[in-house]
Length: 236
Length: 236
Image (tube, rainbow over all chains, first blue to last red; front, side):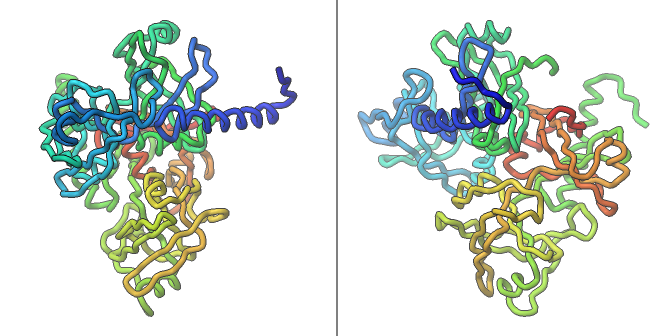
């Protein structure tokens, strides 16, 4: 146990510890820049990770894009057990006839194909992205997907994912929230801000993890963050 | 005077008024998407505008890029009196050998050349952008500028502009803030958030106007905003 005599010493040590954790986690979680686990009064450390643009695919669409019998192969594990960044990527083409190349597919396959983009990507492609929780594709736009074997026109499923926090029931109990509630995420630092409307998603099998997109992480410069807190949202 | 019988009617009319103002202002201020003037207890309406990536140039650099005797010509006025988006654009090239084309120059010319980018642009170019108030170029990176007449290697002056609010002394008196103070900007809506550290810049000749960059406006989806408030920042 190290005794820290001054606030300055404490800050210095905190900075070093964060750096070590950041270096460790960038490799571990496979989303970059990785968020830092924060000192947290709850049962588990708070991790904030950035979801870069990515795709989920159903098996039949995978066959069209990558050929008969194609399967997703693991590039690296994600933070949530069983989830992984695959070696497979697809190209996206939108209404402006511009392409975003090499959008990574996350595995395992799902029972729907879904593209998650930041608004910056939507402006580039010419798609007005609807804000959605994963899997809700009502009134969502599509785009063209191009793989090494073939292409397909996705009718719907292109979204901006609503910022959300995965949590175990133990965490939900600690924060006194329920599935589908919304929380605030306070991010301190040179570009500090507080996100409203961080959707709570409770599940037995998940670890505490906030997902924001690249626009959101760039707005607050997540890499320079000094402290992050998840706060129960009282006001609307 | 229209009497609004229900909350629903009121919301409907507010939506229509905002739409009309937005359509009007997009043309007027030359930054898109334009922020909406907000009901405000202060002496002036609160306008939040998005600074897309842009350049300021000194006259001697303008000659290099556009030829001897070149001057900036006006494309459209900006919100602040005397400032304008020029017809001239430059191409930027960074360390990854990628180019961002057609970055607009804002006029009039200044006594320094400065490139203001969002972090998304910095990632694309391979430049780690420092957060700066306009004109502070200490320890800032440069890049290559390419114009129709010639190119130049800018030694420094590539920044992310710190979010800031221009205000007249009357507004500063109303908010009880001084030049160089920092305020919060609360943005309500589907992607609502509260920006910390909005730097106050007081000047006799300016109108009340907040500037955020495209990452910040995309993070909060400024176009879908229902209400914005400037709040004195009490805590650090």
